[in-house]
Image (cartoon, rainbow, N blue to C red; front, side, top):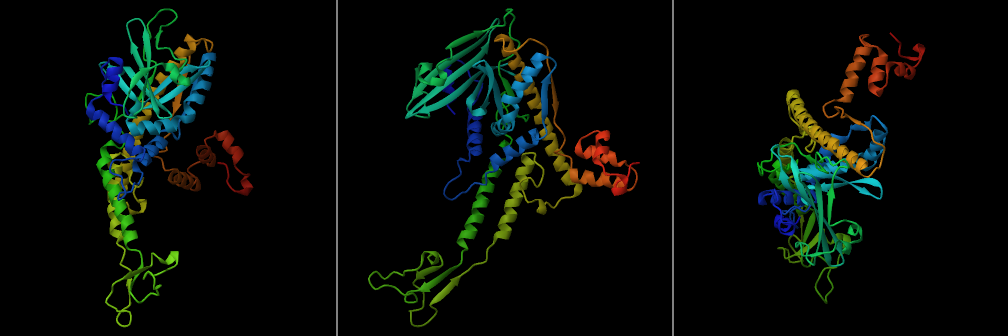
Length: 455
């Protein structure tokens, strides 16, 4: 991520990102990419940031069903929506969870719509309104050609009568620097971009919103309370993740340091006279270690077996306690990261932890739905501006499901017991389980003589 001063200097605009906020986004990005600053030769990574972001993305999108309908325009939007948005949505949501949010930025490419998912570390808000909604932004794209880094900055801003998009390109021989301005044509994929584009509706009416959609993780920003940006799903567990990596590294060292070895005295092993070093098969080199023991080679103990007891039990217990604390701070249910067999909780506590996760996922789904609705609005705007599809009204529908909280196996067993007791019709159980109508469920059922009976 470039420094915020680069955007200020290049475009002459203020950026609504504080130094503290940029440092936090840099850290979340490095953690997600498994490049945390504490990772070194002595500290291994458990990969928790990517696992946490991936789990939230899975829970948020796993049961999502959404479509656009209502007219020929709606049908066209639905086809594009499924092609350029829904197919890769889970991956885009995962990256957004890591960075605290992300942007969906539609554009027209060769007469078709495309949508770029911009992560938090390539996005600078420049203006906001009273509701902390982003009303201006700068997007950063970087490519490398040989030893030269090329950077494109795309600014979106809205005036009283038009929507203006500016594109500037820069080149540098250092990744951490913006460098000097250059032509957009230096990079083939940027050659067709206009340095500045003024967009208006065909009837001259102002554009009601921004031509991008921001998906914000719905948590309070405890890094910068005035920032319009969200925070990572693991932002409140960063220090705990660091400790978990350290504890995991201790466990690895415990296994390595406790490897079986045989310390042998000089004279106990056959050695060639020319270099006085023992020659052992490669597979035995880790087992035998030639040391100056008390044995002289002719008397005393010539061998000592090194086989200490491994203390993995207490170390794994410590790691599991850290994982539980990380789950709590990240609003994940107990057992998501920690050992589910060691969750010594009451049924009420387990249900509460699942409800906490369910509430967090529902809030994310509501925020994502708002972002997707605005995204389709932008797609509809471009369809009208470029005459990509017939005009018409459209409507959107969303079905998110409740699989986060629902225990399907337990629910099935409960309903099955009601059927066995004669309190529930079998076809209702079949209809619920397979998601079909009762009429279709009857077709699934065997004849009465073969098993289930209709009531």
